[in-house]
Image 1 (cartoon, rainbow, N blue to C red):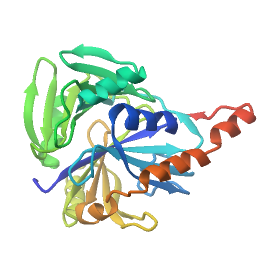
Image 2: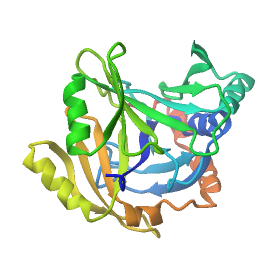
Image 3: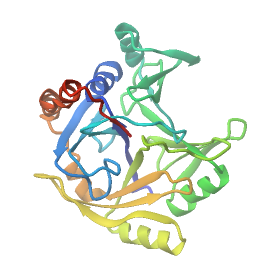
Image 4: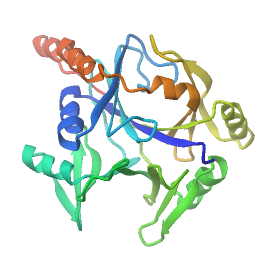
Length: 298
């Protein structure tokens, strides 16, 4: 399974401008690409919404060798309700810590050289106050589970991850496809996992030829398939094929064919400008204010 790669986590964002400030100015990430869509995604990448939306990929470097964030913005939705499903993304960057202090972005020291902060919308981020490594600073994504043994078995046996570390005291298991990639930490929350309306999605790539087999395996094992193998178009860019799964707690998992995804995910030098233009052209806040109304809270 060494050919499988951790790619990104999908966050729904209600305030694009504040979110851009957090990722660009606090964390120090770059806008890798920005795309606007007139209607909802066939694989519900933007959640269960049919209208106009945008996708912005942000990271410390290209998706070929960095784990990044996919920010989905649904025009007209101003906020989402958090659950206990996403428990944090950890990255190592003393620069991000100093940026947060300089900009007055709230930080809480939660351990030795470890700070907790929040992205707009309340998503937790853990910043390790050490020099940013030459490779990918993003270390792990933590997801809440209701039965650690059951979830570990799913991710290991069905998806091919290997267990790297177990901590019985903290009720966590650290897993991954390779030591050089961002890892997945499963944390037993001691009860039901609530996804709220902010629920995200974690994405991986695999060779295109593995997608039908993966789907067949899930059918055979009576596991949930949210979106059977489907082609997704992005105007002017490569068409990719994906299968969307759900683990025993309902965490959404996207597997995408690697070959086409490497073409789709090439860094767009115009990405930053495209995001800025889209934000400047987005008059939805003004429209709602003018009509004395508030954006929908999902």
